[in-house]
Length: 299
Ligand SMILES: [Zn+2]
Image 1 (cartoon, rainbow, N blue to C red):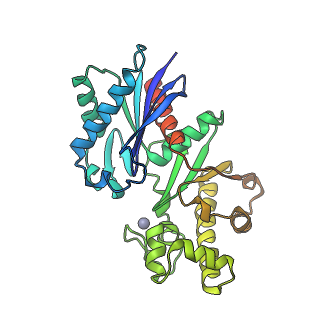
Image 2: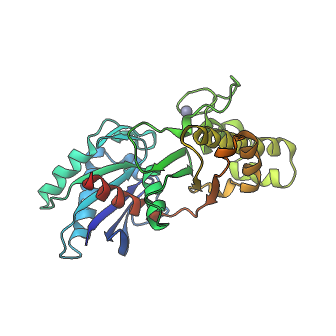
Image 3: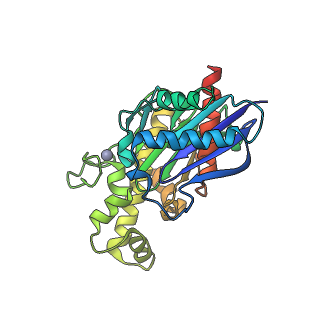
């Protein structure tokens, strides 16, 4: 039997205990009020480590079986336990999160190794685990404020799929990173607000549905951009299944995306891709964080 603790830290922190890669008991949340979405950005990194350690200690104490591994999913560029960049939780940038959390846990008498994963990679791991496809290539687009790209199995690299260039138009400059023509500069929530100063993204999609031409053109562009990025990954790593999730996945219409993608992938050996929308939830990332930590242990 393996026991892992999985945590996902995005707008809030959700932690749960996994027994043989299945969630047991209810996950615990910080802050406790789910509507409280801005709290984490104001908390210094060292305090976030203490909050994580306290959650892990509470879950570890719930059962006498020792914890084999701790996995934490965090947005941003994560390499070897270090948060190299994290635009949405900027206080984490440069932190040696695995080391810091290991130290805090040692102080609480918990000796489990800590593994840090990118949040989109953790979702891919969680989807692979819960769909019984841990031996297959699984790729996930997360459509939220930013656009994340996750893949399982984990391979070393940067994998900032949201920042692939999907347009050569120099006017496409709405990406938060400052890069021209990026996917997130078209699909990201903030980018949409900057493009349509007079409308919220929800209104853009609603008006497109009602036939407003300017909004329809944009909704087409939004789907073509996602098709272009997905087609690029198919041409690099092959076909297979792509999942789409995230709190703005409701904007996505596969019946618009699929024909664009089919127009971009013409080599017959690459056309066996499949597309699936997943309801966003915290549990998938949490399970993926724990599964990634256990897998890292075995390597
Ligand atoms: Zn960018």
